[in-house]
Image 1 (cartoon, rainbow, N blue to C red):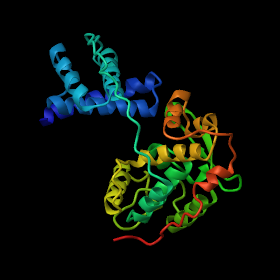
Image 2: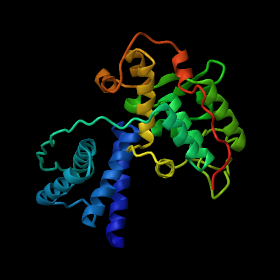
Image 3: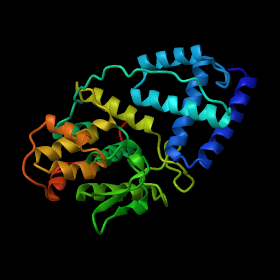
Image 4: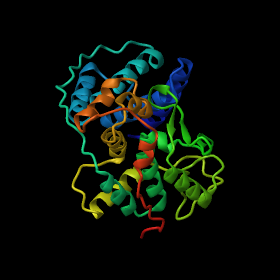
Length: 302
């Protein structure tokens, strides 16, 4: 994109951000809509304020081949907002038919594979991060956003703020995870963030203003999976799946797991019932038993 087009895009992004704030859109929605404009501009190599209907149809046709349906819906909503409130004209309606949905069950690591995977991760900060994701059942964004004030050691619980759908929830905090969190935090002592962004090989903790990058966590897990020879297709989110599945295997009630995961729709949680047998009711010690015998490696890798 040439400098003139980039300058025009920057001006429109400022206008769109202001319009989104005035309309009360959530920060996550604002970020998603901004990413759409960058994606569309990158696709066409120019500012997306004069796209023809045929060009938009071609764009969404390409999107259907490369992106999830949820991303396509976000892009469509973002472009409609952009036309209506920034360009002050309606976007011509584009009918997009959702492709047939292929439902596949995710690969789930066993408890032994989870421990092997986490301890094979080379950098300690990523090791601790993945332990927290698994033992609390968090989304990667929720774990990145954790603050020191969210950790209640006396009540053994963690406050998850502004989760999916803007909802808060509390999740139990296993003793092993609390100990790991405390020991890790004492190594950087950031006044606010549990997982601050590193600078070079050291944490410059008192000036870090953002959490560490999600892409680094994903890359660390991919490398660990290859290093320990696990053939399953695993991502950081797989640890959240494993949390739910392992609790089901211990007999925890599906409705309680729904609450712990922050699912608003019970059907989302119910898919884990296809992976394992659900029995009996719940008790808090089942979450503690997820980490029975878990020995975390504290040495930094190479």
